[in-house]
Image 1 (spheres, rainbow, N blue to C red):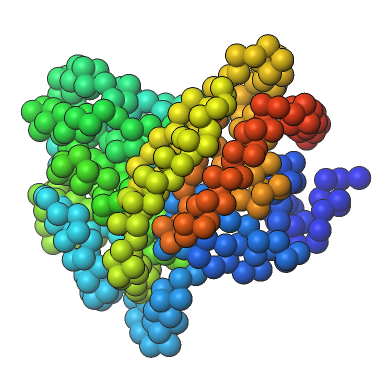
Image 2 (cartoon, rainbow, N blue to C red; image 1 turned 90 degrees about the horizontal axis):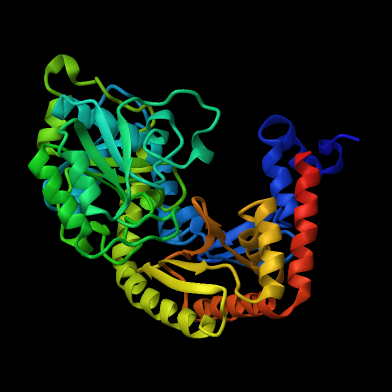
Length: 455
């Protein structure tokens, strides 16, 4: 019997015509749940289960799921029957949203290019930096995550994402994240158009650089004629407290990449904020007015959603809540998990946190842990994720480039009661990992099923 013959009819269509391995993975982790309604931080399954979202679609749902004000704005825009994608007019909503974005970003950022995703905005940053500097080289940080299109993928050092996709962009190099010395050595060659870096490396394990790193990076980029570009796809839109994580470091980048939370999680949208000089180097003459465009980039629904999202974020002071409640959450997590040897640290900014785990010292735990790690390095983390979901109704995930870090990133509308619920749940799961053979035997069963699926 084929795999698709064993799954529900609607899932079967997805497996047959989209991605069967995704269905297999969700089934393996016991996370294949159909949802019928999502609101705020809560996801409601068709079987009546209520799931707390602590992933936010990888920082898409800063305003929560289906915020009524954003939904109302989109309905209003549809009811207007106005120009959505004429491609031959001035989209006034795009001008309004761009103005609000650059006002909040500040510094030298004066122009905005709109597109449909963070990856697409990174691609624009690559082209714009080359146009402005006349250089081809691109510099990034090791273990970064910038997207899965070919240009963005060229800025990522981890082989998992790159393997099998052939030659990527030439003249790209990666330096250790946080190393000012390595950055200076690379930039001193004066061959790089841009240094593209995340203020906090989310998928690398919620890695925060030393306080002076971004300022030093900005200074070095200015000295050697390289554009300083911040990828704020996961850290922007008040996720870490201020509008941009860059504001914490008091830096003025030449370009900033935004996406994900920009439209309330309802419409695909991305944006590249640039200086006027960088923008003018691309759109340098009348004949080059359309030299770089995006078909869906300035459509009225995306722009209206962006304006409504900014309204919600600011009227509900969600950035201030993220800063205050995030600090409190990390303190409570640190206290609750302090007794457990496998918890190395809790770190983050605002409502973007990570719980880092480490191999156990006790022999009885170490043998099991190393067995699972040899099967797959993500096995331990995925069992944590599965337990949190199945036993406690909480959706989260490990970081894509660091399988020993559990990401904690709920919508910014999360309540104090929902934060307390998470702290209790993760403490119970971690306690189970330290005290129960059932945790490890179930992990072994999961490993066996994974081997069976992959065979």
